[in-house]
Structures are given as C-alpha cells and as structure tokens.
Amino acid sequence: MRARSRARRAKVTLGLLAAAVFGVSFAGAKAHAPGHPKGRLASLGAPRSFERAVRKIILATGQIAPPVQPPAVQTGVS
Image 1 (cartoon, one colour):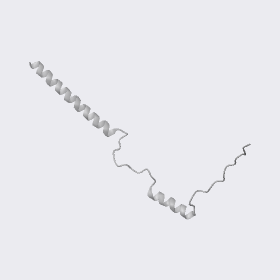
Image 2 (tube, rainbow, N blue to C red):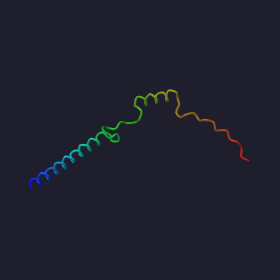
Image 3 (cartoon, one colour):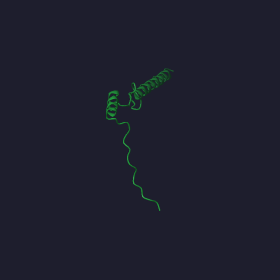
Image 4 (cartoon, rainbow, N blue to C red):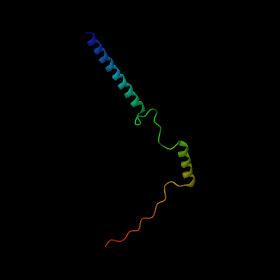
C-alpha cells in the first residue's frame, strides 16, 4: 500500500510540475513573441512639424498641384 501511495503522490507531483512549467513557458512565449504589440501603437504618419513645413513651402511657392506633363507622343494607326 505504501508503494502505491508514494507512486500516486509522485505522479500528481510530476503532473503539477509539468503543468507549471508549461504555464510559465506559455506566458514567457506570449510576452516575448515579436508579433504581439507590447505597448501603445505609434502613428506611422509624418511628424506634425514636418507636415506644417511642407504646407508652408507649398503655399509660399504658389504651387497647388504638380505641373501637368505634355501628352506622350503617339504614332498613327493605319
């Protein structure tokens, strides 16, 4: 009877230890995975100061749209 009791206790202990290792590994992988954002997302747009400078330069030169290019040369169809 003592041997069965020790074996059962050993199985339970190993099972709990395995579950704990799995849980810690899962939490560590989730915290360090490169695909998961870890903080606030940053805007990918240009900084506001840069946008203001570009607008100021465009308005100062009077340019509103890019200049229109002449049409490409085409050959006649026979």
